[in-house]
Length: 246
Image (cartoon, rainbow, N blue to C red; front, top):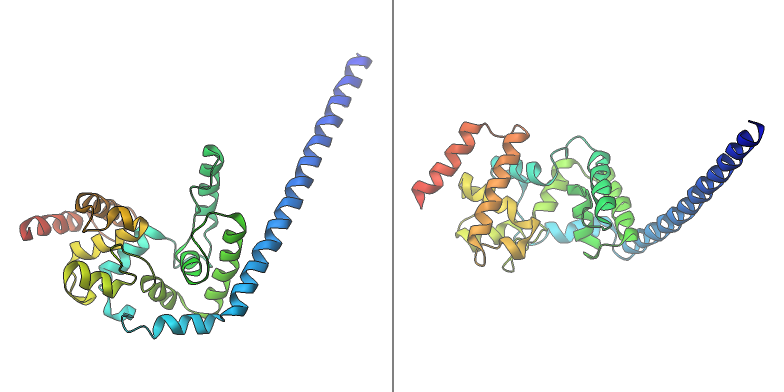
């Protein structure tokens, strides 16, 4: 028995040593990427201060205030992109945890769990490449956005700085280009359709893949039902009205 106990203790010591070593390695690697991400964030914001970047968006001739957008469009964007937008501080730990788990299972960085604020930070300052230090820099920038601007302003900036396909980089241009009307005049169907395009603009662009865009619109509506923005009856009416118009 004594020999068996000694072997068990030895195995436990080895296992504990391996786990501690692994934890130390992970901590060091995490610290390295954290420092790199912070430096990337600092470099970006020192080159172009946040207020200057925001002003460049707001001074665009096509910039559309949130008050001039249909409520259903704003709700559709929130439902499909970041349904906890008005509750989180710039990052969504639940979404990050889910995305991280899916990434681990697939051995990739396919999912980022990015909030609207993080996406705005990325679009304002960083590239689309999937690198860990860029994601960390994006988080630091998201916190700065949340610190200096309210949620409505962040949503407004986001909507005015995302790509809708076919060369349209803001909601005004996309509304005029695809439907020939101002955003305020969008029908419920058009608004929910437009809200789904930025997820994959080259795939869902109306001029290229109208059928895929319509499928994406259905996904947007289902999300709106799921998160309480629409009832089943209201969602059905949107689809029916579009069929009648067509």
